[in-house]
Length: 363
Image (cartoon, rainbow, N blue to C red):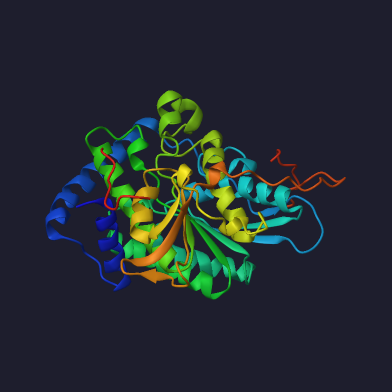
């Protein structure tokens, strides 16, 4: 069964509130998940736990007139910044600083992400965040890795993410979801379990994409974003625990997410947020399941809802557009103010800021 079909099956099960996929794969999954879990725990004991906590990156970034842009960040340890040594090295801080530089406005970041969080924790995180900011301009989510390693039923995890996205969209806020990373790039897991982890995480990412787009949000595939760099220089791209990204790794993830966050906020202007896809860049419009299957193979790809002929659905489901915004030209940064940009949370100065359904990657 191809990835697009598997993703559709997971998303369809989630849409009907069901859990538990095919019994045959479940039997294999129980054993394999258990071995992966045991290997991860063994690797963790060998490597140790060099971090007591993640940096607190809550605060206001940049300078400029008017009310600050409100960004709410939900998710797991990657969203929390575990592995970063400084608050300005997290994904949230880098994205907030980038948005501020491009918009010429202050950006207020509220980060409710929790280390070890699963998709089931998103509802609680959202409730906590809305106590601080009633209507965020955009909600950024990074989730999925712990759903894989903790053996959470994929349809259940996808359903919980979809419900969270629908609640956010009902507030009138934009949503950008960084989908499940490719766990096959984590070195402490031995083969052949790394191949299984890769398949499970990519299948979850594709199903997340379908559910999020159906709910009105947009996704960015994180996939094996760090794969080549990790193989070439693991000490640079991953932190001391060899599980979480380093500052360089988080900068890479933030660079993939920032263009989509800017598009959601309308930073690009002049129709660029919804620009036409360019076939020469591998972009296109099609059923969301096809776009989702394609996106997981190309880290940094954005998938968002669209219409064809005034209709949002076709014979094979929701229409979606796949874009590779990493190649988009950035608008000129707003003219810097006389006062230095600050992160008022601690009074510090931050640094400068498809074609072919069911195609599946080998390995």
